[in-house]
Image (cartoon, rainbow over all chains, first blue to last red; front, side, top):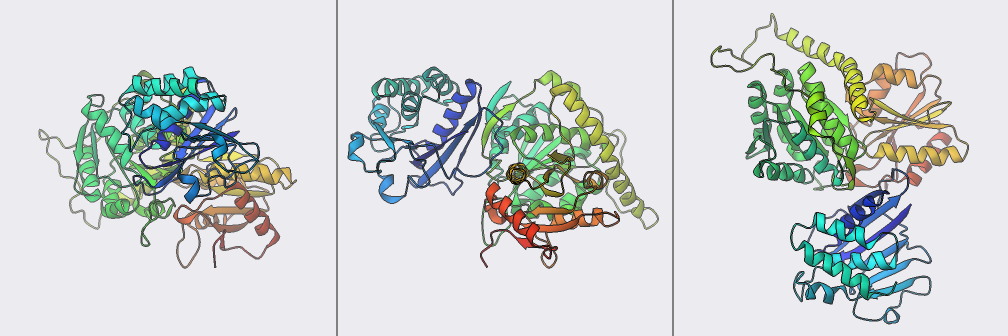
Length: 182
Length: 383
């Protein structure tokens, strides 16, 4: 079982990122489960989403308390919430930021990777400069960094599930995949 | 076709496959996405049903009653306060012997206001005459929806499939969506035995005198008792068609079990995880997932609990002043059995509080160590 926790703000697409990742993983034949931390949804409020994958059917039905990795869609979140709570030692923290990994201080137990998903999203016309929708760019970075899913599966999932701008979303994922160091 | 969808959308897909004639609904979290998806399916022309946006849940059920009385296949969905508001018409649907199907997403009743899950809302409707089935995962939700239509129409009794708010309703999982041909074969449309027909006028639900009213309820009870056999047949046919087994009691590691834990809904999967944890410690525990609640599977329960020392019943509900509702049901089912296990009721997970496998396993270990706790225990409550 591998467990991933997404931290984002309402409107950035963190919940959809979890769903799309589960769709991509399912294409590769593993059992998946994706769900948000259930709350009253508000734009810009901190939101969590969870993805589980396993080669066995998944019976567990609780939130993820000890994730293997975390993905942060908004770089201001670590200042207000304890994003590494329960995170396993050796985990990867993938964070949407124009900064370098060494600009963040999450301690020595984790591998920090940054990707400028906001710029990629804006470049592809996803959301606005102030409210970029960064989830599909982040998914491309996940494919490269976490190596749990092929970029082809991610792109297929995005194209199938996007209600609008399918090509732009797929292009954002591909660009992030190319840009980030795996 | 296999697709990653939420349990709520698994209901929508099943209702589409069931080829319903009328959908009448009023939105309420966490049910809304079931009927939102269905209204979009109707708007796209994929579901040739009449979609009625009602002004209340009371009216939704009333519209379904009218539709079913005219011989139409009718569906609605609700939660919590919406279900409570429907209460009067739930009796009418069952008393009228109308095979309406409803998806009920378990949400706690306010106040205090909340949107999270427990089973108080559906279990408060226990005595309305509706059949009730509790689902553990998205696939069971789709399968149970279709089985509800089949079972309800065979016996002329409305059926409610019940699923946990959010933990199930809004969780994405892979679901096998069977093809139309398979479902058409399993669930063909048949003429209802008594319908509104202007060419042959009848009155339904009117005044009935003391000489025969009581018999209407006797027949409802007899038909509900028949459901045990109907469920056996229909789940067998469904298993033949899909390879997927459902049964009133879903058993986990029951061989040689000295202790048994029962729960319904997603907590039933958590029970299996707690059982596995306790088995690793050498404690002989088994698990039961309660799928069918009405009719209550009395005989099946007596059979599987033979030789069991203690029986722990997990309730996400309370009948205030007594105990958990499943615990009461189990006690009454087992009372006349000579070698019955000692029964302990555990209240857990009210208002969406998480039932974790470690939390449940710890609770069971504590309960085993405390033979005095028979009527009611409160898991992880802050006192």
